[in-house]
Length: 449
Ligand code: SF4
Image (tube, rainbow, N blue to C red; front, side):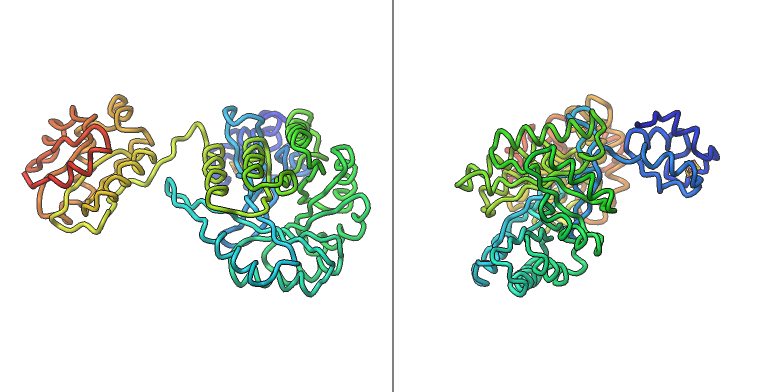
């Protein structure tokens, strides 16, 4: 049974030392209760209190870490049914399947393509993260060879899929240090597959005929010492798979059923016979609680929409996406290049910088921290006021980079020009276009005033 923040607070040291990252034990207790903090962040909890708190502070869906390096990801750890209640934390891992009967050339070509599917957006690198290697003939040697091929040609993490214990052991040995997901323990093979994952402390997928069977398996495996489990409800029919996905999330969050409190793995690749339909099904699992989404392939037109959907759903709705305040160089500007200023709302930045880039005019772009507000909102809220913008321009050091004193402000913020010029003696504040789409023409025609 989960404890309230006050109940947790009573078990904490109450010294308010702040070592946990918040100033008081009460604040830490509240964070623990809402799943925003981990108990280990407080080094002073007594063993007795720790035992009592461990259950209460664990997230209702266990966070499971897998992969390594740039593609290390955590799945699970979610605390709400609906994004607008707080946020979703750990985006589903996009995974594509390889089989051991594919030739090395085919696998290498696929990996080359998949590695190229990386997109810069709002300062993030959007990309798929894992491959699922499916053993088709039980050959341990071939299974390990495919793992090595993937290692040599990509930085993808691994799902190792085999019913053969020897093949799994060979695959695990080949991807030492990569923390693969082992797929899958079933009612029939859990006694053979379970110990293999447990020995190396690796995450283990659990596949049942239905949720009831999954629950029996997770209880059995948890009792055997497994902590990091991932659930496959076994459904391969879209409606049933969707219902299972929702039922699992509700069981974990509402019924507090620890036996079902694990992230899920879903297989659109086994639910459709075209990549288009797989992508639609994959999109459903990105929206509704998939921890991992396994596709038969990635094509630019399939993976990009999934990445964007994932980005949109797994951003904190209460926190605007921002870019860092500073001077951005676009198209290699020099001392004669124009200087523009705008706010740090990420969408504003990407639209403005995109237009400047497309114009090919070398330009300095100053991004001012307006707490993630767009130009008009920031201006209306007083966060993009003339005096503040002037002080920012002075402190930015842009005057050391250019030989003129012109600065172009967004047309929608024309009202700040007077205050800005007062704050920036000698500078001429030029009012740029209202719409970023007209910026290219403006920049091309700009001359020092
Ligand atoms: Fe309290 Fe522990 Fe945080 Fe210190 S580290 S403020 S004792 S909860």
